[in-house]
Structures are given as structure tokens and as C-alpha cells.
Image 1: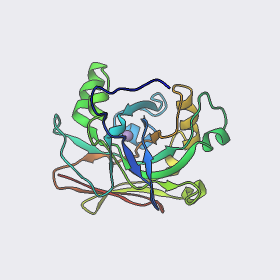
Image 2 (image 1 turned 135 degrees about the vertical axis):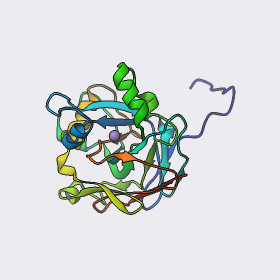
Image 3 (image 1 turned 120 degrees about the vertical axis):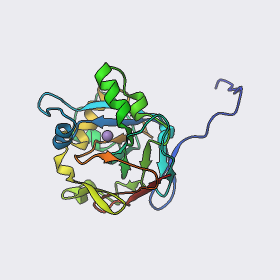
Image 4 (image 1 turned 90 degrees about the horizontal axis):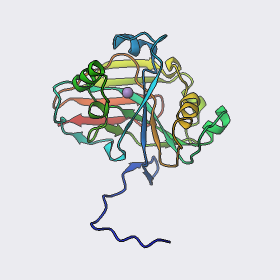
Length: 233
Ligand code: MN
């Protein structure tokens, strides 16, 4: 083994909390955009000619349920996007089947893809990258991860993703409305990146996205998954 001699103390390993105990070590955060047709339309696109896209957030963008997220710098139009999040316990590349994809899943959680919508709009207009719009500090609030053996996928056949701000419902959609299903997302991602244990996948948001202000309380529920709750500070 090579001798490692850090020139300063490395940053802590980012973790996400698991329902029932334990810490899930986060490696990468992959996100899918444009995965619900009604959301593509509300953003001014056409789901037929505008297929889902991938982007990423840094692993240390994860914050747990119960956090107060400071209103981020550099924006005056912070948006919520409620999303189902998949956590991987194993990796692979160039996967072909639903079974191969399903075997990678450790668990599932309710998440929120916080977005600096004004910066995203400017990036889209300029044909520039989305990093500043999507990959900022604390931009990935995440509820407790429920293990797949305790919360199997068929529990979610009729599940609805509901996001509330200050108790008022803003998003309410069936997971069936996803354009690419969870196995299809994993298969597509594995054709672009070698997936590994510790990866999180944000699977896209339905329609109803909107702005957040200081002191707003956000709640994301997805069927029987532990709810995600956070506030903007
Ligand atoms: Mn999103």
C-alpha cells in the first residue's frame, strides 16, 4: 500500500443517515432533470423533443432532515424540487437489465434538489454549465434512507410525491409519472459513468416547482418513506 501523507487534514467523509441507524457514506450525487413531462412543460420545454438529462452535485451538498439551510448566496430565486432519491450499495457500468440495476440499490429516501433558478435560467440562455445553479453548498437536503429490504419497490406502486411549503401543498404527483423509471435511470447512468457504492441518484421533480424564502418550512413525503423536513434560515 502506498504511504499517504496528507499535507493537511482532509475534509470529513459526507454521510447520509439511514433509518434504524448507521451512516451511508456518500460518494457522488447524480441527478436527472426533465424526468416528469408536466415539469418539462412548466419549464417551457417539450417532453417529446427534450429527453431527460444528467447533472451532478458535490457529495458534501447533502444535509439531513431537520436542518436549517441558510438562504444561499448568489441568488434571489431559490427553488425547491421534491424528488425520490436512490442510494446505491454496489456499482457497475454498462448495465443492461432491470435486474442488474435493481441489485445495486441499498435504499430510498425523500430528497429536495435545491436550485438557484435565476442562475439556471442564465446558464440555459448562455449555453453554459449548470454547476452554479445546482451544485452549491447544502443544495441536497435528504431524509433518512430506508433500506430496500424494509421498503421494497412495490410499496411505491401507487405512491405520491408531495412537497409542502409552510403546510401548503405545492407538488403532488405519482411516481408512475416518471419518464425514465428507476432501473432505466440506473442503466442509462451506468452507460456514462462507472457507478459505485455510496452513489446517490436524485430521480427528478414533478411539476409545481417554485420559490423559497427565509423562514420557509419545507416537507417532502413519498408514500411510506420517512419524510424530509427542513427550513430556510
Ligand atoms: Mn431536480
